[in-house]
Length: 140
Image 1 (tube, rainbow, N blue to C red):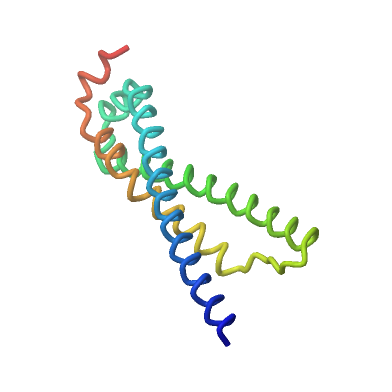
Image 2: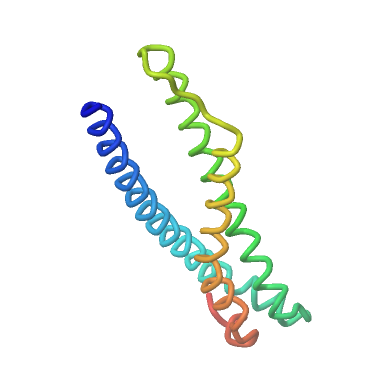
């Protein structure tokens, strides 16, 4: 019984540590995505200016950048799921430990990735939508 209690305590601490590491990873990944999208806004300032000058609404620009951010984060999530699945296969093949990837965990991972992309993509998308078309067309 004491061994079971010790194992439960160790499992609880490991679960909490994994949640903390996952949270920090999501935050760092979100900041990376936001920086990538901010660079994209700067590099595509003229394109945004042309679209605005031709009549695109601010919400269209915002939506375009949010969709790009979500696609970027989903792609990263898919790569993470593939890496996790590969690691689980290797663990179950070469060790006595059982390891498998469940469908709900894949769905949750992709949902968290898309959500992180959406949250951290709002600022770059809003910044792109707020560009003045005349100023944007003049930049090089």
